[in-house]
Image (tube, rainbow, N blue to C red; front, side):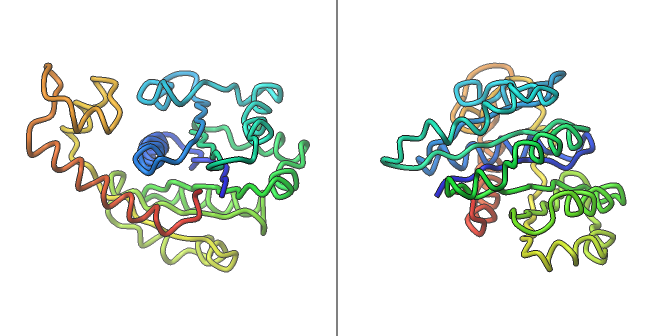
Length: 235
């Protein structure tokens, strides 16, 4: 199965890039081919950590966004099907929606047998609830919706859990998964080293190398993330 995974949440600081990086590592460890795209012009977090797999794309340019869909046209249909991960920067929902609508992207992907997954990465605030409703209002029934309760950005998701927005999403078949919090100090070291999660676990030398128990905590965190991804049709 091929999938187009649009990792969003619209607001900054909810952990979109962390989810994109974890999903990339999930595909790598599972031997599943994928191509990544990074829409963040300022931080390019996805490209920094997974440079061999991801490249920048300009969300304001239809020609640039078209390169995302062209990955599936290039697929020869033999062997494992390729999937795509797009790390969406904050405030990219409007230009992305215009591109999706004007290109009739959902129809094209359906004809190619590609599953379209909208990932809504949420913190514990009301903004994430409102933005989930906006996402559903924009695309309606058809694509998959994955709501990620990111415990690294809050511990009380009662507003989200009790919201009409989540109920509406669940009525459309949305899946809700939880991403555990990775120890902040370990994440800082990984970020300073521009390391993939694989490199963080296996590198033992250098100023930002993780200690033995730090490496074990990353392994445990990834294992929990992989278990959540296993429940989703991600490719």
